[in-house]
Length: 436
Image 1 (cartoon, rainbow, N blue to C red):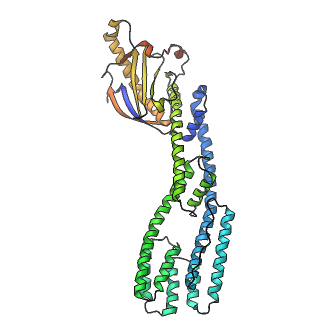
Image 2: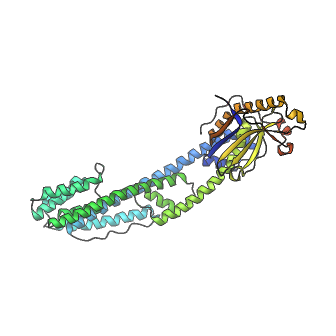
Image 3: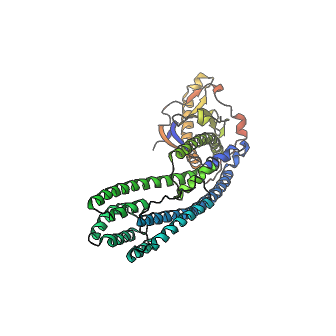
């Protein structure tokens, strides 16, 4: 396989970890020599911080999930009892966004009081048969589809006889089976109310109408559940990815409540969060572009190159820099960044000689070829080092050594590395590249 020549272009992507970007932002120039030790210390601090945040999120989610299960169960019980009693009951409103555990505890107690009052009325009613009461107790113990159907079929049998009980069970169960509920999962309260109404319908026409409404309700519930799961995943992603302070405390509390199943993500909150996330990502990208300059500089120096001062805007506005290894004499590598296309171009350059004959001699052409060939042998090591540190790249253009003449520039267009060579940091003989 032929080696690449100095003219080579790569398309790059900055994949610098946010914690490394933050660390490099405050890193003094002379500390770049300690890049790897600083990088490892920052990584360990970030892992500890993330573990602490994850533990907090899990604890908050578990606490709220307990309230969620209580609220869901009590609301189903209230709906079920109100249906059995033939009453219309208004559920107490849920606490506002950012509610405390005490607020949710008070909401649970309000639902418990309502359920207790309905249970008292139901069991005081002498007209309710023993089978209905037995089925109600069973469905409270195991609120799956089978027990729910048994409850309302028992009520129908008591009110209108057993004649069509099997037919009603089959029709309603077939519609509800589209939900594909996990084993032991409770039937959603609003669908249970529709199923009860269909089972207890006084005529076939009324039953068919209610079954159509139940089918539509099932379809809507399936879609709503899909959206709810997407919202939970999105809220969890935001909580894990965004540092503290990006979102207001009440918004963070809302996201935790969403992951616990207590809330839905309303359009206004979502729009406000997306604006903040977009602003954060834009700022983070700019910080990463500035940090990439420090990573590039440290990587070149670690590999033993002498590097001219690099503009902080190299990856934001574009530009070029030169570097060389001690002993390369007049040869350097020019690196040019095009941030719009996300391209980096490398090519070997040298200063134009004053002697025209020497400039055009065969000896000079041979030296040019050797300089290109030498750089091409070293180039893969630089790409590997940069990728391990978060500047990933893919070669999109390369030429064989000697395919094009070495670019010759006026001496004043190139930096003078004579003084820097004396203090250049040598490349380590043995080095284990860090994992990205």
